Figure 1 (cartoon, rainbow, N blue to C red):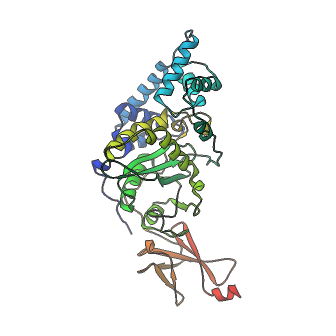
Figure 2 (cartoon, rainbow, N blue to C red; figure 1 turned 90 degrees about the horizontal axis):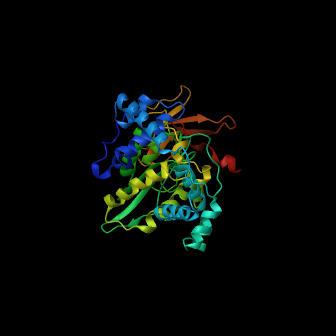
Figure 3 (cartoon, rainbow, N blue to C red; figure 1 turned 120 degrees about the horizontal axis):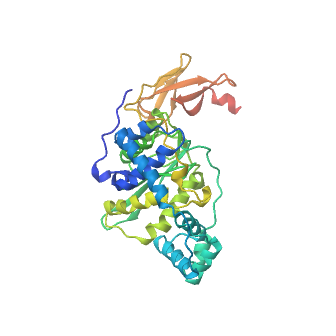
Length: 387
């Protein structure tokens, strides 16, 4: 049961953080290292730097933060402020009044009401009625800590000059921190698993991941286990699936997709996957570290995100169950034999041991588990229940 993980991703499949500048990587390391209870030594290992370099980066970033802040606000004319508003809007065409006002105050100590910014944008013809309608906030439940839940999905594919691009996105539910934004050429399990492995190596393991029911996360039915799901569960990650025809279950990632389209995809055409990734990487850094997020009080996602203390293991541990569990191995076709009958659990589980535990409320039913994950209830006498 001690399966090893896939080989490292080739340079063509490199993840966003492998392409960021040294300054951006230093900033990401410093933000994670400054969070409460951060393990600086472990972060140095995940970033592939020495502890000496890590502490040097941390000290330099803290000094840069202080030096960026002006000690006083020089007087500005209305024309100067308006020019600054248009400058920020020009750099970020999808940002509205609240974001621009917040950034002007945060980065330049320019105090201006969001409504005034909106008026400036309207006066210059930079806000359409459709954009105003699309800016309405979504209200959602939020997990109370980082890495309690990651939402994962593909943004619908689009064409480049040479092939289709399938952007894979992973978002932390609590902070809205974008863990993964990767331009992929397919949606196969092997490809996704390699990307997730690199994400786990950098940020650690989440407690739970939610995805939809289609491949490669599921096999099309509610709770049906895929090979990718088996791998995630073996890592100790709980796996849940969105309800069919209810994309709002992964609502924060869906909202992230809307932002990605509005701020990047709607304004670009890409030659190939490398060209797309070269645009994805700086935009991802901007989204995490610079762009104020209205749903989290105009904070940046990076300011609310901590790396997980659960590190990626070098190999999968053996599957172990309790002494009172009935253990059966899933054979060809996804079936198990139990008490003289066959029950189907899914092809993704072939070769894996399953635990059957008697239900306390019924003598003829058992709950099937794979590691920590409940799979389904097996009824030995279903006709009795139907009577």
